[in-house]
Amino acid sequence: MMQPSAGTAGSGDGQPGALSDRSDDDPGASGDEGRGDPPDPPAEPMEPDGSSTEGSGGVDPAPGGGDGDSDDGGEGPGDRASDGPRDAGAAEPCTEAACGPRPLAPNYMCADGTLAGPGPCERQADGACGYTLVECPPDEPDEPDGGVGEGKGEATGATCGGIAGLQCKDGQFCNYEEDAGGLGCDGTVADAAGTCEEIPGACTQDHMPVCGCDRRSYSNACTAHSAGVSVLREDACTDADCESIGGRVVFGRGPSPMCAAGEKDWGWIRLQSGAIPIEGAICCLR
Image (cartoon, rainbow, N blue to C red; front, side, top):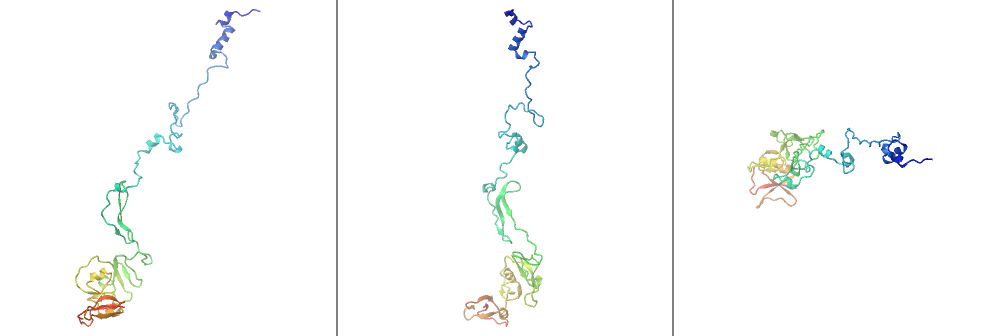
């Protein structure tokens, strides 16, 4: 049998030996249909909006493993931009230094027992820190059954007293005087009604004596009203007025008149007879 020559194995003349040599040196050069170019690499993943993630460099867009949305715990630059600028101090409480010096206006008591005037240091509607001005609540309407309830009362000019015993609000008194719209307090009308009026804040020192509905003498009508008492009549109360409320008349005997121990001095009186005691006379309530 003849052996192939060395020149035949290394030549490129299309002989079987030459084909075998190319297959060893260049696997891609084979004409075999079972072999060919390597497959294309997989396509880059696409975002839901159709844009490619190519160019991201493989870097996770959110340090927390998220995709930049706040729903998965990560916060991306897009979230911060869409939220807009944030006021870091908007939710922080105000301090005394931020509010400044406290207003010099005084606090005062409301009818319901609460305090009004300069309130706490807090953030105002415009976002600035300041002291809230507290105002008294509006007057509550009367109860449907006509009662006044605790802390309530009739408004100024309303009817008071009477058979229902209606009371006025704090700072007012029930005026039974006829010229004020009342029915008087001399006992002529049973369960007489009056009218609510404001208690005077100050009175003059004019000496124009009156007898109050409590059968006590006052220097003038304003003084009686400031004590929350209506005027029964002009001039001081008499010994008869004193006795009508269970008191006794005490005259001075050298020194000024004085009530006995256990009695209450109800003030000075005049004698209904017109006599003028030198040492004066007072009404003492037992």
